[in-house]
Amino acid sequence: MAAKPLRVLLVDDEPDIVSVLKQGLKLNGFEVDGFTDPGTALEQFRPGYYDCIVSDVKMPNLNGFQLCRKIREQDPEVKIYLLSAFDIYAKEAEAVFPTLGSKSSFIKKPIRYQELAAILKQK
Image 1 (spheres, helix red, strand yellow):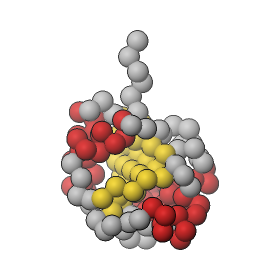
Image 2 (cartoon, one colour):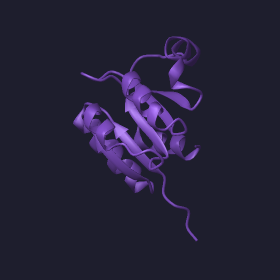
Image 3 (spheres, one colour):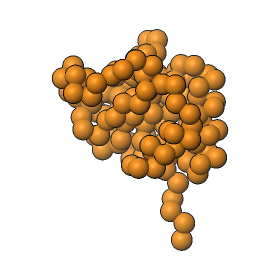
Image 4 (cartoon, helix red, strand yellow):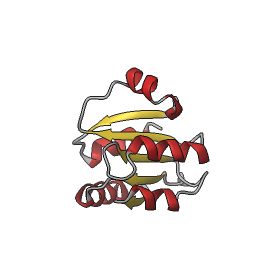
């Protein structure tokens, strides 16, 4: 019996990034819901449904840290990956954003979908 595909909630305010990563992850066997608006992603989020969240950090209106903090309130177990074009050091980020918790990781952009798929499969 085949393993169930991992469900990913993908959020980035750049439509091209969402499109490329979504299609690439789907080609690698993931089920992906992609959003360019973090508010809409939060509205569509369902606790226990997604295996992981992949979110850009820098977005208008609701940044990735804020989005993930709100998601964490609904589902403390979901794995979160934050994308950033800047170097983020996990220990420093944890000190500033302690509510993100140990089930959070940072991924440096740009990233190819093959690399992202490999990271998510290590879940």
